[in-house]
Amino acid sequence: MGSRPQFSPQTLSVLAALHEQPSAWQHGYALARQTGLKSGTLYPILIRLADRGLVEACWQEEPVPGRPRRHLYRLTADGLATATAAVAEAEPARAKARPGVSPRRGRGIAAPSVP
Amino acid sequence: MSWLSQAAALAERATVGLVPAARRDWAEAIWAEAREVPPGWQRLAWRAGGVRLIVREGQMVRRIGTLLLFTAAAGAAVWSAWPDSASHAAMVRADIIGAVLLLAALPLLSRGCSGRLTTGWPGGSGPAATPRTWP
Image (cartoon, rainbow over all chains, first blue to last red; front, side, top):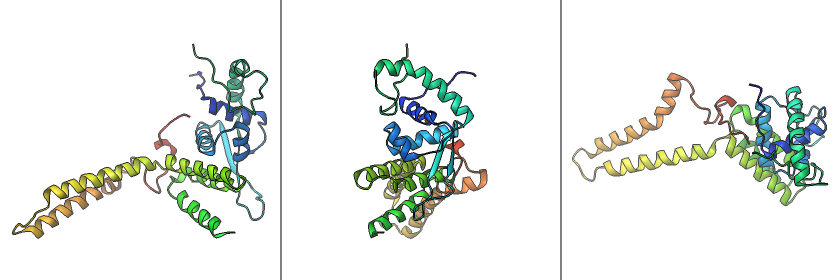
């Protein structure tokens, strides 16, 4: 116990995107734009994160008239702790790999280097 | 709403039913979000991702593979055992058809007796039985 899971670069980018506004509920499309991930990649990641209790999801309570309700996502307390640690761990590798590039614009955070 | 949009909405609703109950919210979510994506290629790509999600979460590849395998095996068995012109050909044919039907129904019967083993069939639910593929 106690060992944090190793996340893929794509999962890290989702965690980082959610971590930027930890208390705010975010839409799937906004996350896709932030991370640069396609829906077929983003949603399986969100599903696994939710299964692990790192992300919570809910339906929008007051949808825009004429449009379907949207699904919203944010980090749980566990998710916030995990994301904070994972982002901090990935930060040096990311900064080294892409100096001057904001994580929001990149296609994800580079995976931590494995010895 | 154009007829194309209506057809897409109908298809979306139909595909949600292919996903195990525990995952239906996610399938609905991806379809609902598609309406927020700018129309054109972007929306099409988003919907393609939705199809991918449903195929993956609904274990469609496995289900289609199992179905094809069973069909091929049943076809081969029938082809090899089908009588040409025996005196009691009708009985033999009935036996063969009965055996194939029994084999086809066996998974359903065993599930009814011993409980659900997997959630790969429509209406199945429970993330516990879903393959744990950490992305």
